[in-house]
Length: 104
Length: 170
Image (tube, rainbow over all chains, first blue to last red; front, top):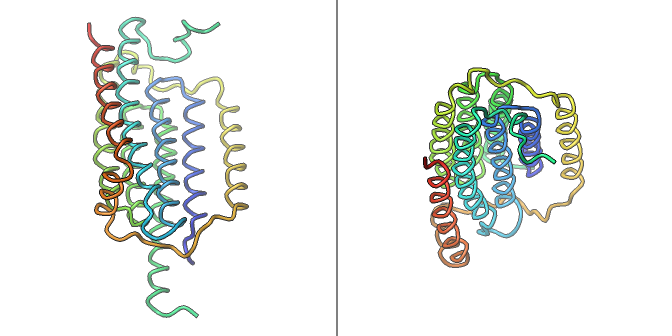
């Protein structure tokens, strides 16, 4: 019954694919952001699992990576939500099917 | 033949892993499939808390705390604010897009490929190696080897903050 690295990697892949499904299938921009956060979070889980099981004792590079990814995710969420509010003010919608100004 | 206490630890690890993994997957599925965005954000918080429990099973206690504070706290509150500020658009809820079937197909294909790759990779892994008390180890690593990325992260946060304020200014 030993839990190995593969258990964590498969769980991380499952969460990543749930997030991918959400990103591709939703139309509300906030729901798409939620799904993107889920994807970032699942990658963190894989990195922390790696730092526990792979490499020599006391090597925490995976956890450091996870800390920086959390930082970037926070910055990304703040900027993305600010953009959503700006788009909502300008166009009155946050349905991503209607935000097609830059479509060619 | 493993001895008694080791079997107990393995069993406890297995129970906590499967319990937390099941809960996290359920909460995550609810977060991406609910029509009501408010409920979706609440399930997102629960999913983040589940992942922080998984960090504890990986001996990453500091990251577990960070996860609860930043993801479950700050980012979720930010999303709720954005949700309420765009309230009229939220009235139509969260309609599934036209691409639902192809999105599910893509995600399933991605999952199969990832699992195939993971199960066929020989990781350079020894026996599991807990790193001791993680805040101390992490602090030593960040302020010695990773000092430059740490400073760059603070610049990134400053830029993101100024950018967000400029974007929503009247």
